[in-house]
Amino acid sequence: MSSEIKILEHAKLQSLVAVVIGTRPGIVMFAPIIHELRRINLPHLIIHTGQHYSPNMDGQFFADLDLPEPHYKLDGVASKKTHGGQTAAMLEGIEQILFRERPRLVLVGGDANTNLAGALAARKLHIQVGHVEAGERSYDWRMPEEHNRRIIDHISEHLFTTNEKGKANLEKESVQGKIYITGNPIVDASVQHLDLAKTKSNALARLGLTPQKYAVLTTHREENVDFPEALRGILEGVSKAGGALGLPVLFLAHPRTLKRLKEFGLWQWANSLKEVHLTEAVGYLDFLNLLAHSRLVFTDSGGVQQEACIHHIPAVTLRDNTEWIETLEYGGNRLAGTNPEKILGAALAAVDIVARWPVPFGDGTAAKKIVEITKTVLGS
Image (cartoon, rainbow, N blue to C red; front, side):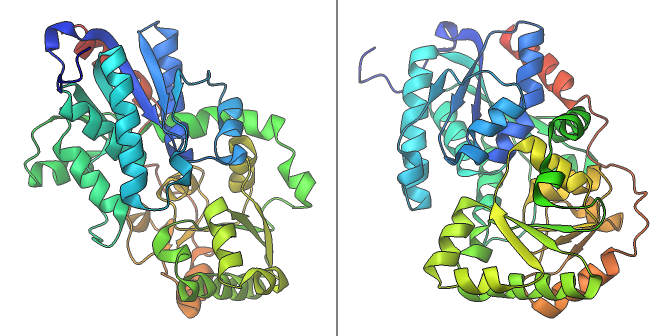
């Protein structure tokens, strides 16, 4: 192909869908979609951007979710230290693959840099873009995730929303693409794999935990872990909450968070907190088993907020806002930010909630709906 060609003609595109993944939430989200694509034998390829590079954040998830190896995996992305560098490397790598494979549709899901790079690469080549989990908004312009999700929504032809809220957000912004309410495939993945997690994971026994007698902590967002005062505030608050509730807190530390603890000189202090038990992030089945048997979860992850809600585990969100406002409305989630006293207060209130809220993210059939629409697009 000539180096002067910058776009692909529609007539020369193949009846093929490219799935772009590269982060832990993206792998979980797309697992049911990939399984459904394989089940109906719809032509597809998987592009892994390499954004997450730890075995527990990547390889183990593929094994736990019984996913095939990606057709393509980019190298060197994890070494990029800035948003621009990381996104640029993924954009260039994905573009080269799309030039070679010429798919008719590219699917991205969520709000990570991986998804922005995939959507931009496809958009510039005149390949249609489908955005899974479209329409979610935190309205916090400090967050790179908010930038990404808005940009992706406005350059996508097909917008797969979790519920009516997402659709209303997109209509308010007058997006160009077609909106579909499909539910969120994270429900499909989480529900489908829970029994398997209970059977195959020995995480509770391995870590000496008793069901309903511990809490779980995850934090990875840059506005939390890239600032020592925020990271320290989170750990102080979680430690106070664990002490007040008589619950040990299992801190499943993201590789980024582990690195920051050491850089900020907080490593020894964090390990000295009696109520906080720090360990590296685990595979998906272990995580799901640990989450589903916990009494309470502290997190700044959108995906973990969803999974806690799905399995009726009260959550304290370590942010001042959330894109998943349904979890607040149903009482299953509370916002606490990074202030230790707010975290303590939110935790004390959270454990008193009766966990009978409805699941607002769909009925577990999202993957089938998305793949059925994908099939129609490929046939057009």
